[in-house]
Picture 1 (cartoon, rainbow, N blue to C red):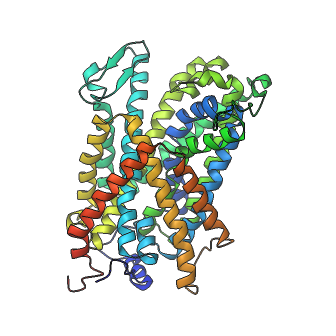
Picture 2 (spheres, one colour):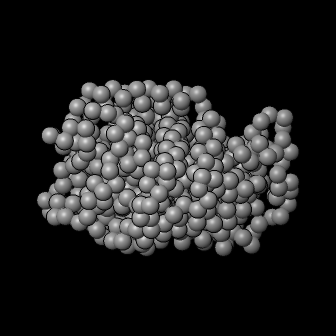
Picture 3 (tube, helix red, strand yellow):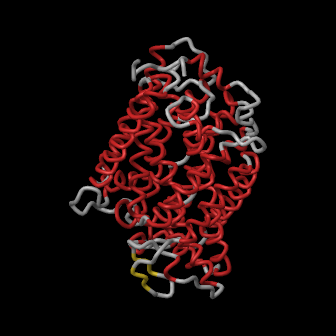
Length: 483
């Protein structure tokens, strides 16, 4: 019994074939692109852009977005090759199982909980904040104890300060609603996601088009503010630090790969979904941040949690302010939908391999979805969304995602060495340059994160390793064929 034993490619491809008990193939290439755009455009664009501009890059935050996108593109190219080779639910977990062995697969699967589950919780908390803003416009105010976790301070738009509530009930509500929608079916969830994507992309484009004619060119001078003498505060080091900040804005494109087993034509659809969504979102991000910093001087975004609304206010289109908040809510909703779906598919696959209890891979007789896993994460994510401050969740999500990217990039090089002749509908170009560049950039971004993020990662991974040796290793179907 070896913890480094890899899962044969032939076995993985066999699992990808359609069966009566398997997941239902309903997603087209267009739906996969929408899935990626749905996961990417959200909290990052509408909140982190202003922070990155005010604290790090100034108007050159557009360059920060491009740098972050390049790092994601290297990882995305590696994801696309794997997804075309191994069209099985599970994303980076499955790829690691085929290349680096069971133990590393477990590590990455456990790590993906940080990205998807806690990512959904993070966005759920932000969603609740914007919901309060929307309700306030209609003079509707929820009880203070029910809109804030016990360990955070919330300042409402009317200036009211809440020093810790009891529970963030709106965040729990949206997580529960979307989890129940996912139980109903992937096709239904994808249809809702497509509608949400259309709404938020339309508003992003409206922001760019209407805001463009109100741009004040003097706001771009200097385009790259002079460094203050502190690394990361403007200048080129500030642009790099800004890239680390806005990296969160790109989290989610890899969630497309978790739906490989539900794609109609995964060999074609996976690369299109992953790379197509990344290209579309990068273009929108650069244009959006260019307009935003052209409407308002970058330093005025310091500490502003709603920079998009602040910038749009100078256009005079007040009637669209409510529409902007609704679009942001739609954006956040689709992000949570994709992350909750991705998390359930990772645990579904790990359970099928015996590394987690059979509970997580039980398929609903009618809906053909892993409904018990969805219910489990309804509770798990709701607890984090309802009681943990958003600031503590965000960095955990970033460091978990970056670690997944690093392992996928390494996995492509390993697979090229071990199985050079295996069929690949999409081949990552310029190997080993592209995967090595992906590893280097992602490790650099991990290094830029706070020490607390590393401490939490170590604790989380230690817990995961304990579970693996207590349960996973003993019940692994690969290492225990008799089971």
